[in-house]
Length: 535
Image (tube, rainbow, N blue to C red):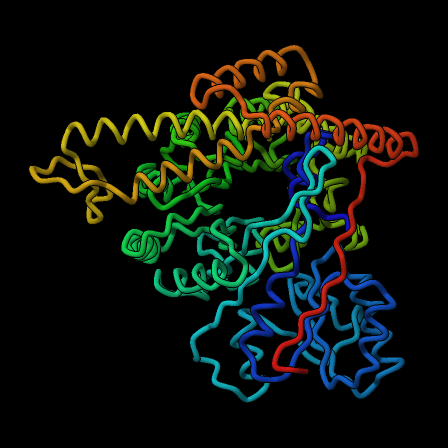
């Protein structure tokens, strides 16, 4: 399993600084929770785990996969056909977009569109029943500077699809350019948060939803319930720029947005989601309020040549986000981009396992034809971001402490000026008889805790900094932490020293891998079995 979100797509080329995480196959748990058929979820199985599990006498096996994993799905399905021919094979996931799936992966059914409704209909159950959201632990593992930490977060699946329908977006096109909510109201999301807190003790959530704030009523309802019940949960979300501006940074802070992922694509952007947005100012405003910003940009667009692609890379880096995802322009089956390039006979005959956007293009570019350039320029973009702005974890630490200080100062000012939050206008307004904003005090304490928790990474970030500019930045961040929170405690000092020690070990492992021709270390998630309804 070599497809880590951070290390492969966001903090690539940052070496020992890159946080290492892999996520469980969370849609499987949602599907199993919402059908009455006794079910086992087998996540990240080794081959022996998978083949032994089949001996237990299942009637149906569902295999979810993405396009680059098609050969894994093929091998699994062929084994079932050969050794258990009576088992019905159901395929799901983005891999089912393949146009020649019938001849590639043996199967009986394809779980299409929104999977909960599809499976319920398939098994003769009520497809319109409310979705029950399981408590889903966040990463399968979590390493930082070689140290394995305890995973604490949880995942919320609030909806699928997106009606922005960007030409290249598989998420939009797989779901018919529509948004399909799984949790339709703020109350349903709040109940899912409560369950995760109760079962997993999680208070921080990654919301898997292409554009979470695009449903503003739902987001407002969620905040109202959090305030009513005194729950200052924290969220990582995806959002487009125009919706982020519309909701406003004060709303995002109150809601508890810790990290926001915004697609900027290119400075030549023609997407409606970026029209009229002063994106650099937006990034700075979000960071000033403690919200970590991850921007995503696309390389090798049709107009890119050796000069303009570097201009786009420099423009994206100059926006100053904490993290940046660079991905190569990749046509996936069912997208408008794929159809356009197919008609123009510009698709390459490259095996699907290489359709991942992190290497050679799977289509013929008009100006950039050398496959070596596709890899070199992409890696160079990540390296340039790293060398200019330093490690992403250090940027996140700076945003955390700067945001905590700013939000606390703003809160004191509003209290002195008799200002109160107005949920209708999503603004702070004058009020002759304002109430004490106890919820905001909770939120500020939560922000302070986040800043304290990330503090131990400052010393290893300094020790392994890529250049003098990054070291100067780290010294500045350390001084800001000292000014805001005081001298580090003995525990923080000890934790920092441990991370330096484990970071040295990780650095040697990384050098060893690179001497053998690999780009990075591969961490394998453990196999996980979860049984539903006493199978």
